[in-house]
Each structure stands twice: as C-alpha cells, then as structure tokens.
Length: 106
Picture (cartoon, rainbow, N blue to C red):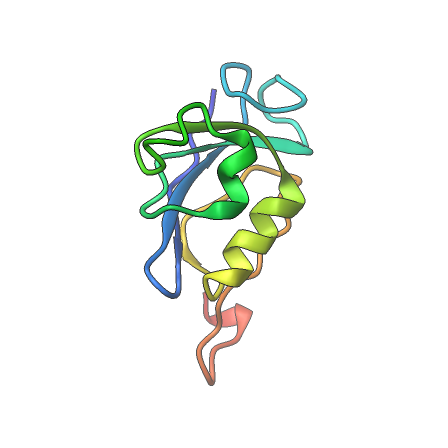
C-alpha cells in the first residue's frame, strides 16, 4: 500500500488524498486508476467535501470517503492549484505555476 504525500495548495489549504486497498476509494485496490478517493484531515472546512464527511461537525478532524476525483480537481483549483504533494492515479490535478515556471523546471 502506497501513502501519497499531503496535497498543499497555493492559498495554504491542504488535505490528504489517498487511494489503496485500505482507503475509502473506488476501486478499492492498490495501484489503480481511481474514480473515487479518500480525503483526510483538510486544513480548513471545505463545503465541497460535506456530502462525504464521516463527521461533519469536525470538518478538519475527519475522513471523507468515496470523493469523486472531479471534486478533488475542483477543490484544488478553487484553492489556487497544487504546489506540493501528490494524488493517486486518476485524479486530475491543477498544478499552480508561478510566472516564469515551466514543467521542465519541476
């Protein structure tokens, strides 16, 4: 089982995005291309995650199961793009690029 590094966004928002045989994701196997993933412990309340919350009364101290990968893309985009971390295969990611950056620089 692989553990993916926590996603950090341009505006400081962060969350864990996981896919594996032990995560609340689909398919629920290791090293797959996922269409739903598990989100854990976001740094702040994110309303797009509400339908998937295990405990919505503790939005930064809970797990969100079976979150569609397109929702992850929208959250990352809303928060300015991903500046560090990683997502499982199947999750479309908007990476924040500063003026003058190219993918070859990364």
